[in-house]
Image 1: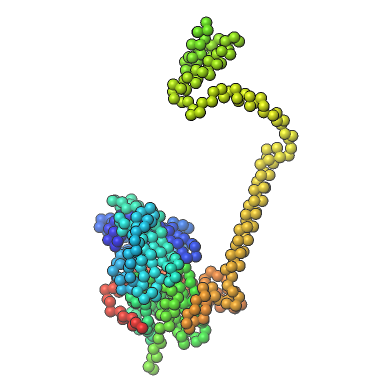
Image 2: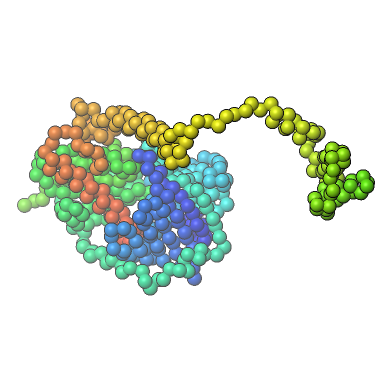
Length: 287
Length: 196
């Protein structure tokens, strides 16, 4: 699957179905041009959102925001990238079970179930095209087996030649690359004592939240399929309340421990988010 | 003479003769009408265009039916028969149907809203009731939902803003992660999580 995804020229239309009944249709093109991977993901409804990747440069064109580029080897869109590019990385966290064959989007498909090893994350049902190994359908299910977020491919074309769309891209005219002002990770006076199996820290920094402008300590955890953000913020004791909510397939959970407000955001069950938040330990600084 | 006429008729059926070439008179007419019919039937047969069910002499049945048709008197002209008004009134009727459909839809929406109303005793229980140890039920309100608790307006807005900020930032960080991910995986010196 991973090699098919990187080497083939294909054009895929798919629909992302959200738990609240909303859906977003996307067009996804991929090609290898002069040995360089090019990729285009386009939201088809509304004002649109275009993401173009040429090699390791990803450019985002969105309404209300000036176009920008970042250095990345994958588009972070509605599809879990690591699952398709480096499925080996997921073996730490998930079990893959081959279920059987069925028919999806008019093609014969191989169904695979993906279950987290410690049942602390949502499960997936994945259907891959028998011929090309490309994605046909991906369901994210909660622990009761009810679908949360679904990706359904509606058409899939594998072509010998790159789509002519890519000939029109002028590489020199891509927006400027954002340079992240890298700050050395500050070891905060706190630590996380529990994480689900296979989940590791992938980022840590301090930054200001958009809109509110509050400074937060930030850590991102990832198991390859889902990314979880952990925010820590100093607050007046008793000034915020504990609680959680669901936003689409995302869970946002906020918890106050002493002078620390801990917030967990990610596509994971609220119980797991709660366990992570509760495991955060404040380390007294010897002063 | 008669033979000549039949040949002319045959030519007419085949489209090789114009009607003017046929000099019709009363005696030959009836005979020619019969011939006309049978020539057409023969032609259709030769061309294999015969209908699956042969019903000879449809024409006589049609004329018989016309005879039996009751005479319809032209209806009295009224307001509705004026071309413009005649078109307007059906629109009004349709409007009524739309109004009916719309009211049904409104009723549905009202009904759904009724169903979706959070229970008053659990004002913040917009999240599904799920017991997490050490955590009150529900808790935060979703970004889009109206506040039902009589909170000071600023608090609710402030909370929504904070929630939005977190969600937006999470999205942004996920994008930025991709750019750093490769670097991170080169240095797997990150502390392994302690398992409970």
